[in-house]
Image (cartoon, rainbow, N blue to C red; front, side):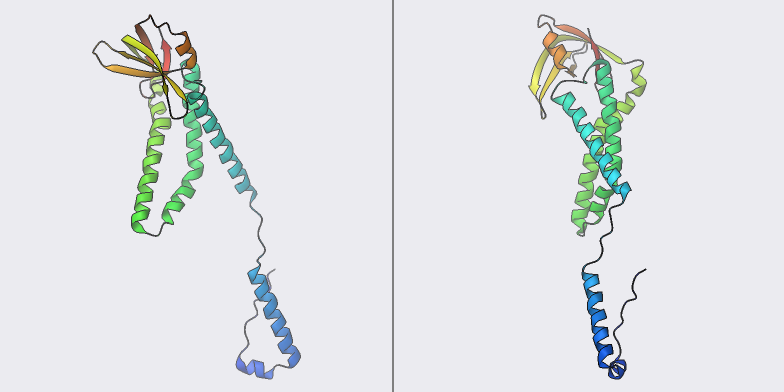
Length: 215
């Protein structure tokens, strides 16, 4: 139960108080001010601690998945590529679900209207691009899992390229209409490719461009 706040006495009440009553009043006021300056800190709710741990685990898993794909050339092609693509999508959705509210609150807390509008546009733009890259493309590819796209390429070239997070391995070629296609491949396929081969048949998911097989 909280102590009742000590209200300041009126001038008439002060005149009627004895010296002992004045001393007691001063002591109570001093104690009240000290309590207000040093409030008792409530413990952090358990659900908030658990939530922070879950967010941290999901964020780490998302980063590990991206690093495996970018730095180590893993989870790129075939069944591992499908697993990596959809695992990244699920982890991305869960992470965004946890951070959406604080990000939105941060934008709302911006007092200047122009800066608030700019911050909102930046947040929406970044979120939109990431959602398209990691979520919408894999979702659009779900119907294509049973019947993926196939393209026959000529003048095929396999090469490596320094990417933002590591070395990217690419397969490039032209289809029958002369359109150029570029696919991301894994390091194992890059190492096993015969430079004498100049044509290839690529089976892939059309939106995420995940390569399922190369013949």
